[in-house]
Amino acid sequence: MELTSTIGEIVMSNYPELSGRMLNLLLTKEMCDVQLQVGSHTFDAHKLILCSCSDVFKTMLTNQKWSEANKPAVILVEEPLCETVFGRFIHYIYSGQLYLSHITVGPLLTLADKYNVKDMVELCRSYMHKHLDAPVAVSCVLQWWQIAIMRNDSELADAILSYIECNFDKVISNPDFTNANLDIVEKLFASSRLVIHYEALIFFSVVMWLKDYLDLRHPSEDETKDAFKRLIRLVRWPMMNKDEVAWLRDCNEVHEFLVMSKSYMSSEDIPPDLDPYLLLMPSKDNSIISKSGACQYGVCNNILGCSNDEPYTFLPLEDSQCCDSRSNFDKDKCGLKRKKMTEKIKNRAFRPRVYFSDYWCTKLTVSNFLAFPQYATQTFFFSTPKTGDRQDIGNTLLDWEVELSPKGVRFPPAVLIGLEQDGSKLIEESYIPTCRLSVISRSPQELPLKVQVNILVQANSPANPGSYYFENCQRHMCIFDGNSQRHNFDDIVPYENFTSYLHPEGPISDLYPTRTLAFTLFIVIRPLT
Image 1 (cartoon, helix red, strand yellow):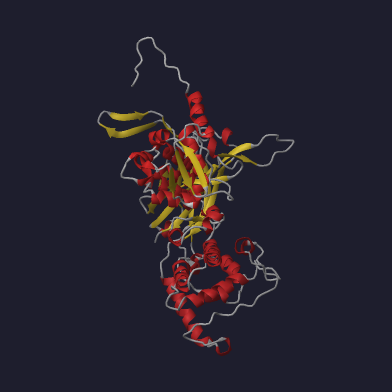
Image 2 (tube, rainbow, N blue to C red):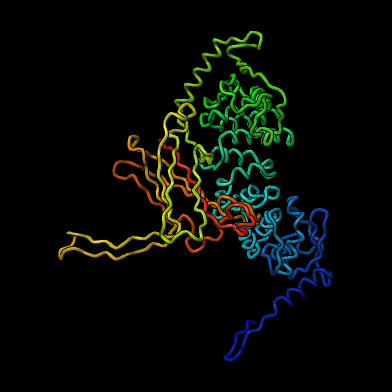
């Protein structure tokens, strides 16, 4: 019976008390008429309540075509992760209260989707949208992404993928990455949209994933060969600068890995962009290598877990076509092969990823943002590589000017002369409430240019106070030529809500007991020709 209010009546709600009564039925097991057996756990429940919340339970427990309809105990087969949170799932059905974390929301969404508890599905999706960033130790975004793909939830999958692409440095550092399946990892490494500090990290993460793949999953020889072939070829070696190559050359673990990979890959399987000879050749510039032969930056130790306490002399990898062993190594033949591979590398066009190292990326910071004048503009100048090929790095740079207007754009009054039949026309002053970024080419001799302008928006992490993440990466395809040397991009961040994008600036001292707030953007300009 549905009640409708009449004139003068006021609806009073007592939902919390009603929820407590329902939950008490679950806790006391009073009048329970069905048992749900999930793994090693048993849950006493009420058919009426289960059926009222889930169409799946209603069909299972009342439709005589189902064998479970007349049984006092029903066995439910769930994934191991879902078994651990099934108690929370039942708790929500009785109370409407859902306890969520980065670790539990994925399996809870799987259960809610399986049993068609629609309101619970929306709560889980909302949590994921609002809590994409989390401390590395508990982040499960790759697991979330796989769940969204399996549910055909394109909106959620796209939002999660955008976070993964913009914060790939974080993603490859958490345990969730090593648990990802080969198809997911391959899809990520093949992407040109990844925001990564430098290309060497892609190789390090490939090594890390393959090492765990061999140690934890014990694949067959054919599966191992397939994994090596699919991932190694995705490393974009020509995009590495000399410092990155030096890091790789100086790491014993890298040499051992390349030797091991040769046992799983034939010479035909190694694509032209993989040039192991370049890594293993003696370094002409040891400026970043310590006397002990260790990487001064500690990158290898942090990611690969290797220790270079003693210097290591690298030798070229043997090739089955030109040598049988190190003892009868044919330098001329291998040198010729290396030359051919280098030519193939140089001639093959690779699109760089979104590298936010100093060489590719420029950090734009507006200091003391709250005191920054309304409609004011801050100007920056920087240079970027013309191509991404390692052979060309340092030879040709493109010069850029950037104007950032974070507090709106003002157009002063103007007069249009001779454009109206009745004479001049006065244009009144106008304003645009927007955060605008303008990019101007300062390399007229290099025009025309086709580039992709990537704007990385840094935001405060809601789940990890004091840390930051890239909320999004705005990508714009631009052509700079004689007629168009300036491109404007509006609404870089929501104009009405700057709070989540401001971060403390500088340390607290006795002289300055409170820190000013700054606004920061990162801009990466990638060549497309």
